[in-house]
Image 1 (cartoon, rainbow, N blue to C red):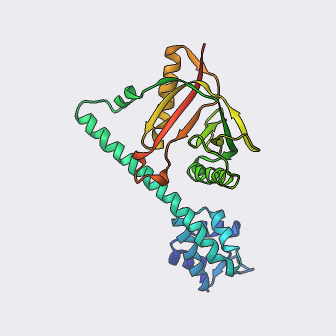
Image 2 (tube, helix red, strand yellow):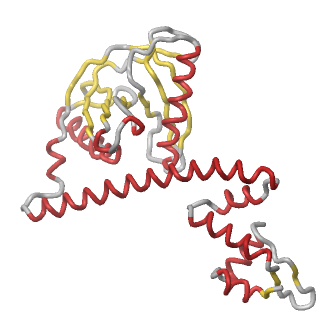
Image 3 (tube, rainbow, N blue to C red):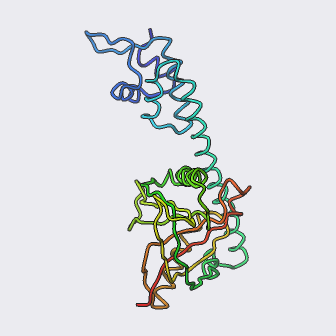
Length: 274
């Protein structure tokens, strides 16, 4: 048996953390001395602790790790394979984001060396005033967290694609997301995932954006916020206001390109004169 101190030293996990893990049911001491409350761990629990720390290094939450540990032994490998694939995709998305940020830093350093403001790109964002035709959309509306947005896009669009294929429906436009949330919430966006179709069927509805301002984004989705800012600036300057829900149209998606810079997104904001 190992004392909590010895176990802590070997695994490089503080005794405070081990006590917390005990409280939440992640890993219990193998034995607690009734007289003095000293905690002891078995040699076998060292491997369990290594497993916990390995999953933590993959950015699994303690709850996710606990759920895995509570599975039946014959279920662990299959479940672990699935969640590791999901985690791999999450990490790849973060790597893409960091690479994009790093490239932006390089560009900003170069711009500054040439006496150019790092915000000069903002003036080059193009705003078009366009009339958009009404359409029928097949859609599903979901609450999606910020961290799950990328995965959610694929998941819910794929669901719509499956319905279209199964029911022999006719696509007449690119996938789009319609934003129902009135404010930024990190714990969840109210998003309607939609695909324009020819037929009016169950699960579809009319969508008539009418007059819109439109901006075409060539590149990473991380640049969208700058476009939202530019569009609001345009509204104020030209004496327009929002008339309906903003939406984005995806001319391609991350699975179709080799780099985020190849992404093409049309960003629409329905408007009317004040």
